[in-house]
Image (cartoon, rainbow, N blue to C red; front, side, top):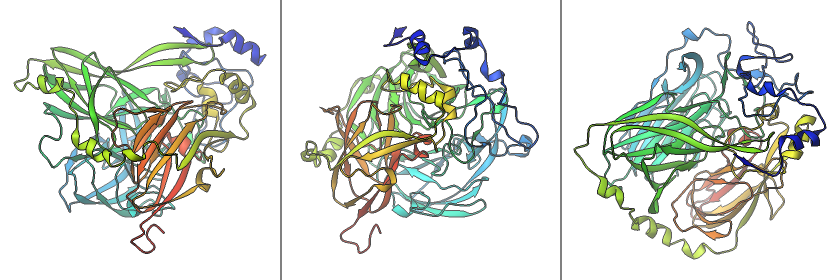
Length: 576
């Protein structure tokens, strides 16, 4: 157990307030309510106390009756759960060039840990259907909205035509309940991608609106041989004994740290299990769809080799002990299970207790892999080789002359606050005595829950112009190579890691804290730890009006986004 800078006694002394007895920490808060947080009754939905675990700060006097400054909201609340169709597991839909898929978003019935909930699904599946196509294919998705909220679909990571990027007010109008929209998708890059809403994804994505797109290579030997391929979608959800914990009606809650779930899932279930033969090499396609949680994935001691990230293979395959994956990132990893037995898939992190001033190692079970017998197809020798991918190196070679150029844009990640609860303000003044580079857990659930997107304004600051967030509108042209220096300000009100996502283009990470990146691949999302500076080089190929933003859902809806326009000089009015 590691202690940092201050401890709980100092924190209480600085605050000059009493705290509740230590026994409070041993209570199962998800089973209790307190005055001011009433249970939902009838057709009305009232706030109840945010679920807490045993490693969080006690409830502070003066906060006992507080609720977020927005109404409580749950889709389908008050309706009989049995009236909704039961969601079924995801299916693979193979699509050839020119094919059309009809897909809707709807309310469904889901059972998690024996409890039934009204949730959302694409195509009635959890996760949504896995769309599989060859690189270079073009397909059509006829989408219909059957949920009780307006929505769109964003095809994350695809370099597709701007009109189909799914951004309300920028590329299309919202798809209202009962309406449809036709998306035309194209797949120029091999790899794993995903789709999700771009309206209130803090609600819709969290409730199950997500799915993968797997783009296969067209050449032989693009990847090393494996025994099987398995997609793994990592997620979490916040529940208590009364069911799903409500969302903010007019603005997202949990705006400081994002909405951490207390139930972790793989492919939509809490008891994921994969049966294999001993000696298999399994290719896992990892996608993190959680609102805010960064995972550190282990495979029970089995050897792991990372072969690709968001948009391409790495220059060199790399053996690792675990895989750190932020919201919206993807990694393709090969894992060798050399003997019989059960391998636990886990999320192993260093949780932080803000109140006591300690780190505590935590391991969360994600699933199991059961290996028995032996495989007739032995790929151990191919797995042992960390291949150098000459095609990726050649693709990046044309950009290396730009790696050390001065940044075209300097972006600072920070936060502005207005109207936060006074106790939250006082606690945060002390909390900034220490900041972890990555928030692996929710160490202050009450204050996080009480903060809304109206009070905590996450900000992208263009340091060259002084413009902020959506007042920024960078102007680029097709063929530009743009260097962006992203700095995560550790002196802000609540420093926190941010997964930074760029729409419609691809980029490489050239430098991390001034040190050259020695093993690159093309990406669309990169995590920026607290205090770090990340240099990215954007390959500008796609005309239109696009966004870049933090992919923590609550931060996005609290304003952490900007716009940029790409014009094609050879096409009149392109991108306008």
